[in-house]
Picture 1: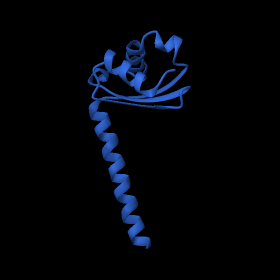
Picture 2: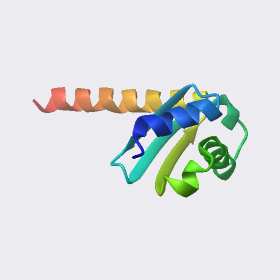
Picture 3: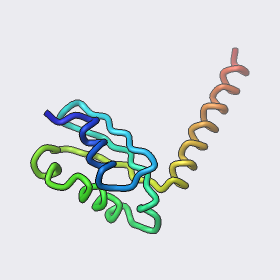
Length: 97
């Protein structure tokens, strides 16, 4: 049976990554992949790199994989945005209570 950790490890083995997170239920999986290798590439080319890292597993074992592929700079921007939203929510909650 395929696991989220085995998918994560396959990606790490085949692609130099800053971060890889995989979630799923054994049938459907979601991956966040952060890599410098994505710099200057379109989303399709980024996904192809991940598919290459997974190799035959994509045809034989993994039936549904959705991906978010980011460069380290893009990932940092996403994290900042999340922190800013959380801070805004906290301030709004304080004002209403």
